[in-house]
Image (cartoon, rainbow, N blue to C red; front, top):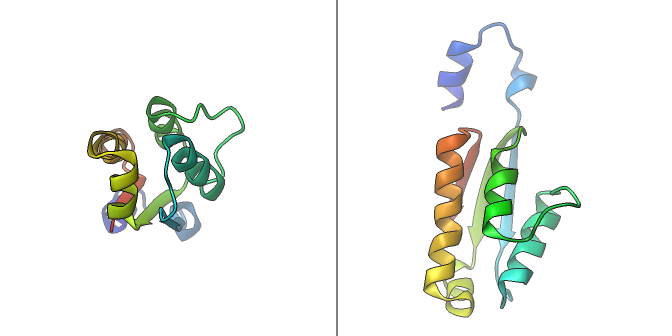
Length: 108
């Protein structure tokens, strides 16, 4: 993907395509509130972040460097948060990636 972007933007330097890589361990997460707090701390979301999936989508679609985010301990978090909420959480990242190609997420 970066190679594709570079090929289209030859007038930019390599610094314009910096990647911020994050690993967010979801172990110990028991509520949606805890999930959003952990994400917002690691990704340094603005203070006005609304701590919900709609706000997450909005922040992911904002301008930022290429974010490569790996979530670990996903099975544990899914058990605590419930399958429906966790699937919605993952879908929020998939939807944001469609809107903003600078978002990448893996769930391990």
